Length: 299
Image (cartoon, rainbow, N blue to C red; front, side):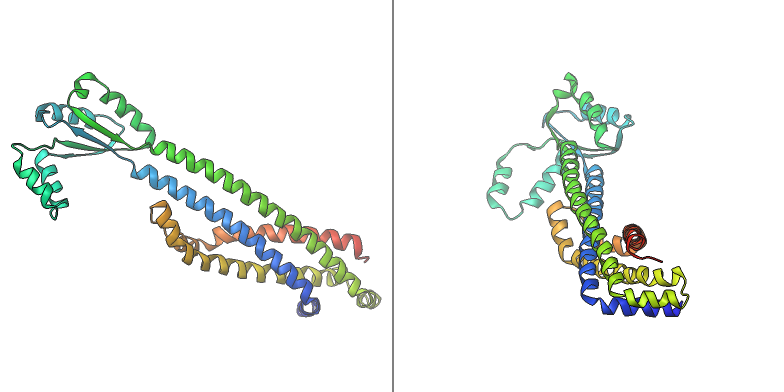
C-alpha cells in the first residue's frame, strides 16, 4: 500500500501542471458550491428573521376612552393568533416623545402651549406568523373599532418574504447552472488527465504487467493521484470561502438589517456544509477516471 501511495505521489508531481489545472477547476467548483449553499443559508435566516420581526401598531384617537381600548385589548388577547400585546398609554407616549425630542426647543414649546395631551393610546401587537395578521386585520375592520383607531401601521412583510424567495430562486438557479458547468469541466479534465497519464506511463505499465503486477496495483495510483487533487482543492476552497465570509459578513448584515453569524455557523457545521461537496466531487472524479481507465488502460 505504501508503494501505491508513493507511485501516486510521483505521478502527481510528474504531471504537476496538469494537476494544477485540475486543482484550480476543482477549487472553482467547490467555491461555487459553497456560494450556493451560503445563499440558501442567508435566504433561510433572512426569512426567519422577518417572520419573527413582524408587528402591528394601533394608534388610537386622543378622545378614545380607556374603556373602549380595554375592550379591544381583551378581545385581541383572546385570539389564538396573538403572541404578544403591549399597551402604551397616552401619558407614556407623551413622555417618550419628549425624551426623543428633548433637544428640540420648538417642539417642547409647542407642547407646553397645548391644553391637553395630543397623543392617544397605542397597542403593539405581535402575532405567531405572518399569515395570522389577516385574522387580526379582519377583527379591526369592525365599525366599533374603526371609530377609535386613528391609524393602523402594518408593514407588508409577507410581500417582502415573497420577493426574497423569488430573488433567491433566481440566484440559486444561476449558481446551480454555474456549478453544473464546473462539474462538466471537472469530469472532462479528470478524464483527459487520466488518459494523458496513461500514455505517459505506457512503458512503466507494460513492465508492471510483465512482472505480474495486479490490476489493482496498476489502477490505484491513478485514483489516488486524483484524490490528492480533490483533497487539496477542497481544503483551499473551504479556507478561501470561510475567509471571505469574515470580509463580506458585515456588509450582508448591513444590507439585510439582521445579525446572523454565518461564519460561526459554517465553522460549527463544517461536515454538514462542506462534506456533501467532497463526497460529490469524489463520485464525479472516480466515475470519470474509471471510464478513462476502462477505455485506455489495457490490463
